[in-house]
Image (cartoon, rainbow, N blue to C red):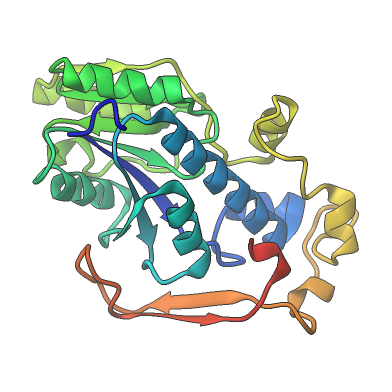
Length: 270
């Protein structure tokens, strides 16, 4: 079934809670619109991971594995559910890779918002690792990266990186050279952080054209000027529900203790 059955493909995702995902898109589409865009991105990335048939897929969730929407997507993708470790992004990736590499010779992490990734990117990453490369990265046009794979999770690669800036990939290259690690870089792929990224993916047919500005305004999410204001979507109406949650403690990667979710029906949640 898998071309590299001994490997592991890790997808990092957040629970799609309104106001907690894709916050840089809120000014343009509102919190509810940003959430829906994130859900579209996550669906696409998991479909890409499954379609690649490269390696067994694991969905690493934050803050826990209890959110029903993520659980449904994991079932669709045939992915095992895992809880992201605590810490900043670098610490979480290092710990997740270290956990996976206890049972696999190599592993690859991709982000759920990396809609520009293709099955070919994923295959190329596993091919490099299977051929003995120590690490592989797929840069993003904004200066970050959207994929990292390794045979050995060297913590120095991920420590004190300026996450969220355009210096992430360059800083990582410097660390790799300083540590003497041999690595490969794939052709760049787009992730989504800004409205321009969403527009670019929609023009390319990689994301559905929802929600548009007119629809967002009709839902009372954004004003004509693009600023947020309270409206009908601020509170679910009869028949709607919303899933919200919290996680109050760090948990082992196989458990979801300390995380609680309150689930109400929301027509946009699936």
